[in-house]
Amino acid sequence: MVASLLTQPIEQTTLELREVWSTLTANSCPYDYNFHLHTIYSDGRLTPEALIEQAVSLGLKGLAITDHHSVGGYYLAQQWLAEFQSRHHQTAIPRLWTGIEITADLANTEVHILGYGFNPTHPALIPYLQGNRPTNGHESAALVIQLLHEAGGLVVLAHPARYRQPASRLIPLAVQLGIDGLETFYAYGNPKPWQSSLPQESEIKDFSDLYGLFQTCGTDSHGESILYRL
Image 1 (cartoon, rainbow, N blue to C red):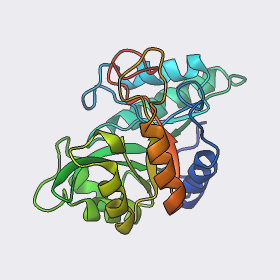
Image 2: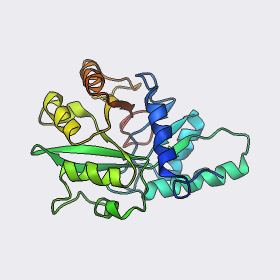
Image 3: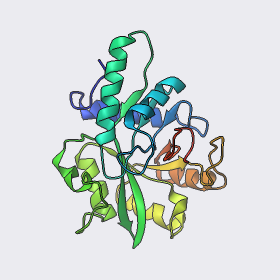
């Protein structure tokens, strides 16, 4: 059966993520790894089952479903993988990590924070699993990062060059709050085929190197293909 995060030690899960992230390049996405994907459990068009079926067909090595304020898609995708593997023992399947995208406030700017490899049943995450953006102080980027860490996860600033304030201001602030990584490899103009955008990639990579942060990649898929955004 597929290893479940509910039975696997979180430390092992995040160790696997760290090992994978240390090897990522601009060419890792979308055919080897994809760490930014949405389903009908937030604002995507794919069911979790259709998404994970595409991942298997493409031969992905690993992925995370990062629905906004929900992990419902993860559970269904994990179930689909387990049932698939029970019928196809010899077929390689991708590693599926828990993921989430949380709307947060950083320096009076709305940003999106990605969490990975966390325990989805941890009580610290209750304010972020209600299907809506958090309120009543829970939208503070400092608190989002703190509680994702408490749940055993790693934390990444999504698409750092897409916000009202420049990445050069937001990234150092996120570093002060304990961010683990940046979504360095991202297609800002939604090109088809997917391609990480320059010069944004170069700028974000410089900050990743400066602060010793992990660099992640993802298509931020909201449409009917996980190979691009829409």
